[in-house]
Length: 272
Image 1 (cartoon, rainbow, N blue to C red):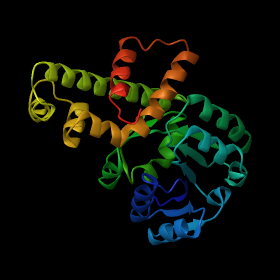
Image 2 (image 1 turned 45 degrees about the vertical axis):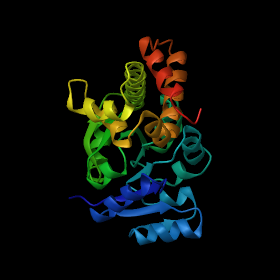
Image 3 (image 1 turned 90 degrees about the vertical axis):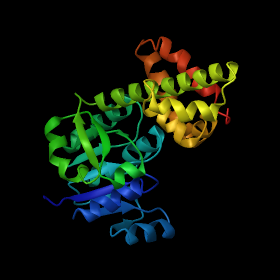
Image 4 (image 1 turned 135 degrees about the horizontal axis):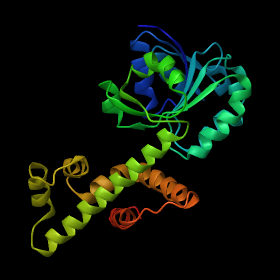
């Protein structure tokens, strides 16, 4: 295994287990910790902690960005000296789900520093990271993705190259739209069952064993109800669906019947 020097920004719910896997695989990790508690937690994972984003790029073969929003990605990559501190020939990989326009804007600046930018949004959760089975949707230069594969493989499998920069984000957004639509269909199925006099708990105990089974249905059933599942993932799913809607409008793409199903899922979210 080729050990790499990895900078990491975003040591949160997803980032911390990623750092743990990177360190366990023998990579040298320098991660951003904005306060003393965050830096202490990073050190406990076996990584070096630094107080500023730009410090993660020094000597790095690659810097991985795993913050929550597009705005945070732009702030880290364009409003700090991060790209200036990264060595020529290094790679910036963005795990955050967002607009392809964001990574394109970053790449326009990074190119003058001879830095490759990849969009590598992820599908899965902390349990997938712990198992080394997080799905990675890669967009950008295929050779650059191969260069950092030893690091990404610490927690990612499969690692998919899907086309030029922005392709990973486009596929991830379609994935999330489809998943939200499937949740909407489950919600409508529960509504139908209720009209027929069938309890939601009974329906969800039966359907995962039948021909209508799928990941969305299984996820809802595991939480016990559509409302409980929507509450647990609503913040993440609403963010990504909002990005997808905006991108579709920007590119004159039509969500078609998917939009109706998404509305059904959103209607069921008790937080709305």
